[in-house]
Structure formats: structure tokens, C-alpha cells
Image (tube, rainbow, N blue to C red; front, side, top):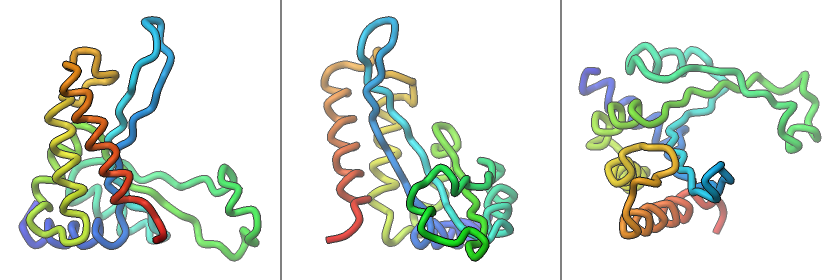
Length: 154
């Protein structure tokens, strides 16, 4: 990716994107485990923009968002709503993408730094059963901070 493309991608992520880190409790055959989900995505009604992200980065996929799964769409006339598309990357894709746009991020620079730290701490490995208690605690702290940064409203 050229520097100018990285800067443009950073603008898209700052304005339209989301850098998300969540921890889900999941019951496995070994008991309850924390599963980490690292995700960077952009949702937009302009499919061409998202296809451009795939073309420039060589990462992720563009999928049509199913509005029928969300109850918030029920109060709108679906005939008057443009289709929504989502470009998303995970794990190794994030490791490749974020360092290239990090210098150009303004609003989501802390999000990106925390995401990269989390990937470094966890190694991007599933449930993280290989992690020390100190690493698991740091991962929870990062997830909590990301939740604060991504919180909507006041």
C-alpha cells in the first residue's frame, strides 16, 4: 500500500470504521474460557468504497449486511433504505493493516495502538489458555479501555 493510500484508509477508519476488541465467555469441553475477538471493519452503503479497501489492502471481504437480523430496522420502510455493506478484517489481517495506517489516524489512534498491543499479548490465539494470569489481566484491561473508547453517547 502506498503512503497516500494508507492515509486515505486511515481517514476512512477514523470517519466510518470501527476498531473493536471484545471478550466473550464461552463454555468449551475444558470449561468456561474467554474468547477474544479482534476486528476492524467499515460499514457503508457505498459498496465500491469497500471493494476499494479490499483491492488496496488485499485483506478482508465485503458482505451485504442483513438488515432483517436487526430489530432497529423494523421501524423503517426497507424499500427506502439503501443496502448496507461491511468490509472486515481479523487477526493477521489487522497485524498487516493497522501499522500501515497508524501514523495517519487521528480519532482512532489509541484504538489501533491498543488493538496491536492486544494482538501482541495474546498472539491472536483463540481462547488464550496459553497466557499467564498477568497477560489475561492486561488483555481484560485493554478490552475495557476499548469498550470505553467505542462507547456511544455522553
